[in-house]
Image (cartoon, rainbow, N blue to C red; front, side, top):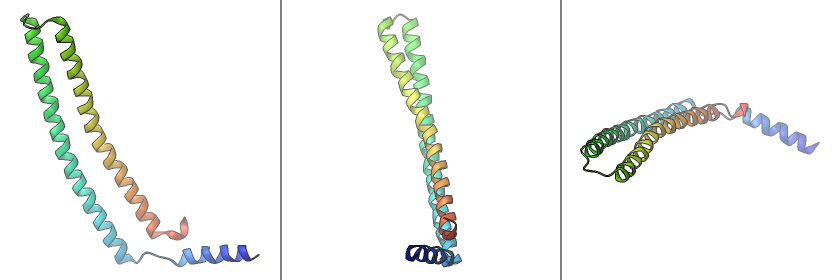
Length: 122
């Protein structure tokens, strides 16, 4: 009986607890600024990785030209190609991760705001 009463009182307390609207607005504004900065940083990182991909494409063309000119043995050509393939895969992964992490961060922030505004629903 006592446990049931305490549980009812806790539920009632959560129904009354509310995040004041000005606090919620300030919290949301701050979090949105954080997201905007992350998007800007992510854009810079994507640009850096895109430049790296372009350089790798240029390297690929150069080693292919060297191989065709018989200035590079086949085994060295294969090693260089494998190295470039690995670097390209890594760069593409980094570009994809930047967007994924940002989307995940946005989702977490939106969920946190919903919880902060609606404690009683939990």
